[in-house]
Length: 230
Image (cartoon, rainbow, N blue to C red):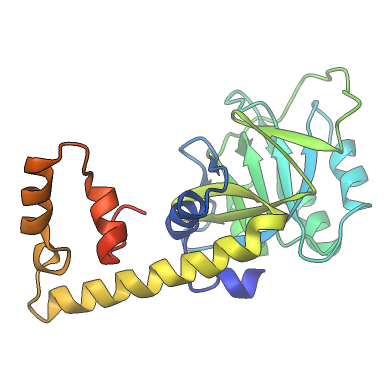
């Protein structure tokens, strides 16, 4: 999975989901890598955080090589739920990265460790609470309006993170690569002097829309083979 995602991006995966009719489940905006430029793709290893690191240690006991720990901390911005020791332990368990619905701390140490960590940002204080644990603590994780599990694949890069059901991931990645190739060709043609309006037959689109108001640009792109919007 990481190899198939290596030359792609989350925007391409998102567009491919739309084109394939696969539910688009993007993480809420603001999720970023601790170290810019890092990227991950892998099976979701879900966990819900309640104020103690023990739930992470238990999740690591279930990890398979290449899994991505997806932490549900409710999007809290008043505490950091993961730091350097947890990330080192994740690395020792074969976890490929972490995606946190919340905050991290120990930023310099995380950068030095090198395991990709995605979160809303950093905060110096850890949790001072200990909430009651839910039965689904190691089964599913909430991430914004989405509920993810080991049946999902997570993709993350500088544009954010999104989740795709594992059964659809292969089809989505193939389509994402096709969109990538089309966009690269279009970019090259623009540099060579053929404008995007010329490539997409934009004047023809305007003429068709004038006689048929229901004729959308997205429909036109699909007819002409463009890949601007999805």
